[in-house]
Amino acid sequence: MKISVILAHPDEASFNHAIAKTAVEQLEANGHGVFFHDLYKENFDPLLTRQETPGDASLSRVVAEHCGQIGRADGIIVVHPNWWGQPPAILKGWVDRTIRPGVAYEFLEGDGGEGVPHGLLKARAAVVFNTSNTEETRERKVFGDPLETIWRNCIFGLCGVSTFHRRTFGMVVTSTGVQRKNWLETVREDVDALFPKC
Image 1 (cartoon, one colour):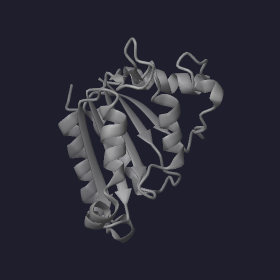
Image 2 (cartoon, rainbow, N blue to C red; image 1 turned 135 degrees about the vertical axis):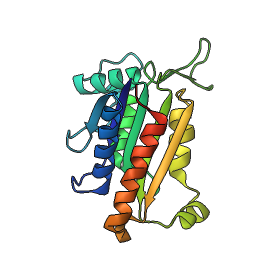
Image 3 (cartoon, rainbow, N blue to C red; image 1 turned 90 degrees about the vertical axis):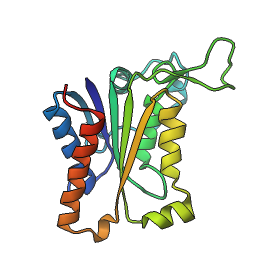
């Protein structure tokens, strides 16, 4: 299987990078091919222009590559921090430019865009790994866990991915080396469960 792994964190020494590295290593150990993108390292441009919004727009080489890979992926893993209950802007821009009509979803005949889209992604499973410095109970009680809604309902559910798993690691800022080591083992276990050996 081909698995797309998208990382969005600007610090190469971050725990997000350790998560992505661990996920890629486990996928490869399980015999899967990996499309890996570190959006910050690649300096991915998050700005969706007016010219790019039509479904039949001419896309840049970079965006066309991302669209092709996400369209062919049998599974998707996204790694990012929770910033203000949202993904980093670079990742939001990646969604805007890549999860697009004709690639990730379509409107059925006779639907001018006002209805419910039909999902086109072939990925059977999507995983989101988040880091956070907000206590879990507070995140759910006070903020309503917006990342769960964004990824499960607004993106992957809408685009036809039937299996969704999200795991948050926190609080990272006060975590110990032992905790982080255990968390990375959990990443391996999650990858094994959803993308087992070929």
